[in-house]
Amino acid sequence: MAVEFKRPERLIKREEDMDRWLNSEAYASFVGWIKVLAQSVKGKKVSDSIPESPIIGRLTAMLDKLSKWVDEIPPLEQPQRFGNKAFRTWLDRVKPNSKQLIEEILPDNLKAAAIELQIYFIEGFGNYTRIDYGTGHEAKFMAFLCCLMKIGAVLVEDGPAIVLKVTTKYLDLMRKIQQTYRMEPAGSHGVWGLDDFQFIPFIWGSAQLMGQDEIKPGQIPDPPIAARYSNDYIFMSCVNYINQVKTGPFAEHSNVLWGISSLTEWSRVNSGLLKMYKGEVLDKFPVAQHFPFGSILSIEPDRP
Image 1 (tube, helix red, strand yellow):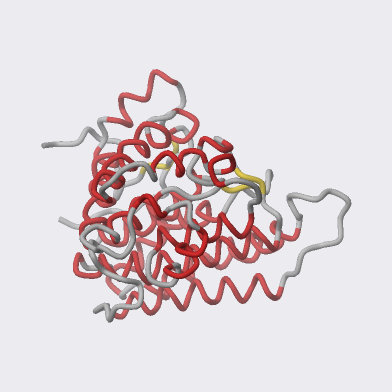
Image 2 (image 1 turned 180 degrees about the vertical axis):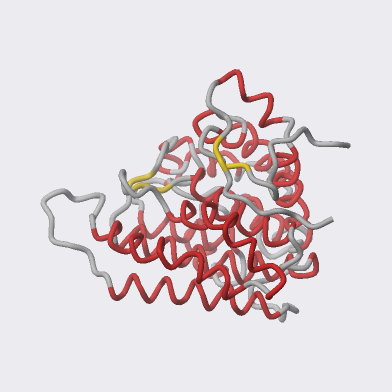
């Protein structure tokens, strides 16, 4: 049956609506997709030779283009330290070009999906007004990638490439944007979060580390270990980035990660992080109220 694509809309408007979200097809699909991709990268390194379909190359090329636009739109001189208004100029370039950017990565028979994918894509880079970025924005971009797999533009076999090639490219872009435009964390838990901006890469990154013996969870707070393995393991790349932008004892600026380092197995780290992601991000009204629903990620009840 052909899918009729449409502009997604926000439907979680009150706390009382949360049950609709938690029992929706969208929620089940998104969480299931995160789990499937986590399993797909178990024991794999970023530097490994990973098979990929042509759309993976088009996705990474698109992210490279967005990174080049950051170079072309330098930060403005302004009195306030954070929230450089040049970010709005960058996003003002992304928005009108978003439909074309998405259509260019899609096969001809799926180009109509661009109208539904746009909102997840545009809102995956941060908030235009507040010039901030957080796990809600990250979830939007990941929902964009999830939608690509749901409509068949990305194959299930592309799971490892989505994590190890596309997500790492997205992480590089977001770190560049955060530093260039001095973005504020959105809804940050401060030292009680994983870091100020990301979460899902830690889930997939811990899955990568399952089944290898080189790195133990107890070495998470060790800066030389994070630096040494940052090119191969997403989790270590995230920790290495934290070490570059934060000062002071690790236990103070990254208390949750420091606590995680007491676990003995990466499988326990992975399952704990997934549970934490649902409890602290997806299951919270401030995130759910901004999640848009269309025909691909539907608010309709999930059918077992």
